[in-house]
Image (cartoon, rainbow, N blue to C red; front, top):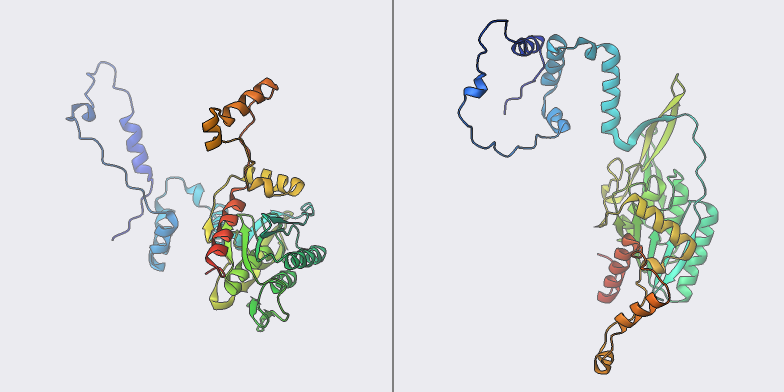
Length: 374
């Protein structure tokens, strides 16, 4: 298919202005050609144009250069093609294409607040761990939680990484993964083009937990937490639930700019077994669950303060049953009337952690059919 470059040229602009001028005084107004045209059929359904990046990528190097030359010689506003504009357009296009691999940000940022660790047991069968910040202290708490799960014969684990801030401590990420993967397994490598030798991470200890593992991820899961979820999937057949991660499984360096900001750019990337890639496109969940950022923030806050059990299971309420039917009563109506007499107002619908609910459903299904995740 032939590709053409469509440009707003000055001659077209002039013609457009001429057609918009009012009629000369005393002249007879001429009917518009549109007014004389016969009624046209209903317009066909608009075809969505291809994404701009796809169009650009379809050009040969020669066509791309020719298009730039044609813009220079034909575009109506030459100021849009000066050196400053071209530099900014080039930088913008590169940053958009590199995604999480590069960004420009303020030189000084406030330190990330510590995100607490929490663990509990759901329905006496599923171990739940919200890791929080990736620290050595939380790693020790993780060991204690896994030991507790083993004592109570818990065979399923949900590892929640949604409250784990971005981190580049891949040593610590490897230590987390070692607790859940077989000894002797190659976990991942950090590849830096400027250094010939890769940093390899291998599981050198027996796992503490060997049951079914599911990780919870979201759009802001980045860096080392992203690597944990990806390695568990690649090495231990774990499943991920939530949203695609940010694609920042890499080492970054911040390079200062003269104006005070910094260019944050990836200088090394994490490579997983079987060429399983996370950088720069992110980890795609096995079970996608879309939730609003506001709802997710609220459930994470409630889960930390009160536990996650109430965000997964519905509270028991009075229901119609066979005994009530024989007795000619209705527990649901009776409960509603009692609440009204007691002055209770209708409460808002309870908030549930949809991502965690789907993970619990998944773990339960795997446990019922027996065995590990596929």
